[in-house]
Length: 405
Image (cartoon, rainbow, N blue to C red):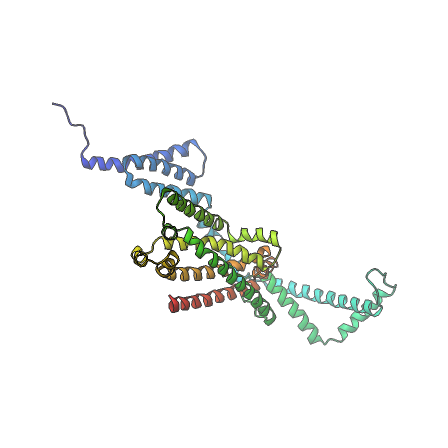
């Protein structure tokens, strides 16, 4: 009598689950012993080996192990370390809210403000004396020029009361203390600054409007060529050549969308600034090209999901292809077209706010200048304006969607 060597169903199930886990454990230990690689990379490779083993013994476990490999590898590549947030919490607090200054620091800032005020007074006196003597920048000053400057500075100082002089010093000290303290709060509320930021943010909105509009006008007709269903309506022939041409048209159009959205708006802005020069027009073109790729794909995908019964009903009436597109296809995708276009407009407002970093117009230039000057309070004001603007646009887009969709 021959013994049955087949495993029982329960044992087979255990073996299927245990084999990938065993491969994961052995591969992890082996790689750790044989290499000095980062632990995350070791676990990623071991998970990949376990996924291969699972593909043979238990296909249900292949996907989880593959996901584990991808997540572990990407965590290693991005240096993902939540503990760094905890370790740097004090630095983050000081960066956002500013650091505390001691009394000694404030006293040094007050002395620095006094010296700065005196230097500013002497500089003004030097300019006044040079103007009175009608000296040109290339002309050497007279021998008594320094004495005249000192006398003029003393007269200017005597014209100020002690309260005015002390107020001037304390104003300079407060500004210096604000810059030294850092932080984003309190925000800048100077009316002149707010007027400057408002003008820049309006330019940002204008860039987003035209970038989105140009992309929309180009993406909607192009999407008809990137959808199998709409292209079959436009080209009704069923010969092998016509079918091949339709497939080629869809393929090439969609690859064009991929090429347009494959580059970030920031990179496209760099290219257009180099081609046409600085200014908001470069930002408009950068947003238009990228948004064309995004909206074209979204519109084409929505066209591929239309209800074919409505199309066949209009075709049965003998309507030509343009009428079928107008009355049976576009009405079905109209809600998606409107909502996605408004969503991209809102996104383009945010994108346009950073295009100024490369000279493509908008408020990004001011953000870059203020950050480099460590004027974080003014940056906070700009960020608050952008947040309010995006909220207003979101409210307006929601109203449009409810009203027309």
